[in-house]
Image 1 (cartoon, one colour):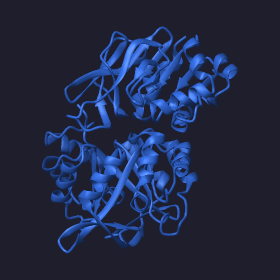
Image 2 (image 1 turned 135 degrees about the horizontal axis):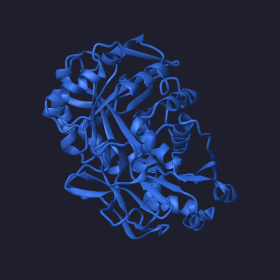
Image 3 (image 1 turned 120 degrees about the vertical axis):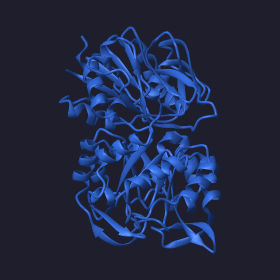
Image 4 (image 1 turned 135 degrees about the vertical axis):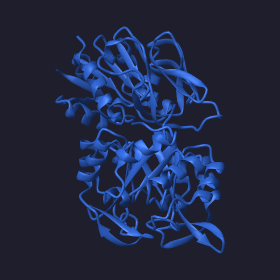
Amino acid sequence: MLTKRIIPCLDIKDGRTVKGVNFENLIDSGDPVELASRYALEGADELVFLDITATENKRKTLLELVEKVASVINIPFTVGGGISEVEDVKNLLDAGADKVSVNSSAVKNPNLINQIAERFGNQCLVVAIDAKILNNQWMVHLVGGKVPTEYQLVDWAKEAADRGAGEILFTSMENDGTKAGFAIDALNAVCDAVSIPVIASGGAGTREHFSDVFLKTNCDAALAASVFHFKQIAIPELKSYLKSQNINIRL
Amino acid sequence: MKVAIINYEAGNVKSVQFALQRLGVNPIITDNHDEISSADKVIFPGVGQAKYAMEQLAKKQLDTLIPNLKQPVLGVCLGMQLMCEHSEEGNVGGLGIFKDVNVVKFSSDVKVPCIGWNALELESHFLWKDIPDESYVYFVHSYYVPDCTFAIAKTVYGSTKYTSAMQFENFSAMQFHPEKSGDIGSKMIENFLKQI
């Protein structure tokens, strides 16, 4: 039986891992290569690496860093940040990424999803969505959460899946960095809307938050950053705990 | 030992290269027929779309070279699917190494693509030396090879039991990514390289 995935996320700015609260007040949380190897050893099911400055500063993801991380880990590795054309995807895969994640550029140019899926297969493409509540509706935001769009969360998730996304990575900006739990209702709405895997992100603070997201939603994976970086939750203990809650987990 | 990774613009060549390097083997990445034919072992990776990948193989005439290779060959993921007779993905003919085996899409009662770690039911085989039955490995795919006579490992997704690894003569194939399956996957690659 397919197991639920635990995914540490490395938000990268200027070659370092950073983490903020509600996408702001970034603090340094370590060397990405070191963190990546630690997570692979600890039993992380996958790694996500997001160059959060890439779109903002119009820089391409640091391919050298991708290559360094890929050379030290033997688990799957998704890279996002600054992908605006098919050629960017090719460069990342050539550097050792297994999948790529697109966010802002897909909203600005939805056809990019079709192009990437047709060229590399949809299993290689994660569409990341950042959303928060505006006037009682979950609305998609861009550029690390700074710019609101016209898209409602569920509509955009559905469109992304229809266009060829292989997975949806949904980050609730209401929950991100708060350590108060995942956005269960919004995640359920996304899971109901699409038939591709959904990765829950934003709000993990305790191991119970992880069991909640797997027991109360149909999400396939849960992603977190600071609770892992700062060792508030250790991955091996988290996975044993989830297994004890009868959740399918690879130990 | 000379190991060649076939380069045809549709492979996750780098992660396979890194996996071999971690085992102390420095592979060559090539589309050159002589280099591939003279290698001790050949790895045929693949990420992407079957029809596009077959077009790339045809351009380089690798579609005629690969089925005639005599040394051990390991197809990975899309590489395994392309070794079959036909794929539903793009409705394209494959290399026909695994005769009469047709690659089909997962039904809509499961999430597609199938992404994540799943268990292997292993048959006795040299690739599984020191690999415990029910080991978990990493899969990323939307299409699959149905249970067939070539199977040396099977996996269950939803209500479907499918072929997750197979063997015919010198051709081995894995649907999962051994290069991304932790220490278990490394051991499998080592077992592949160790065969004579």
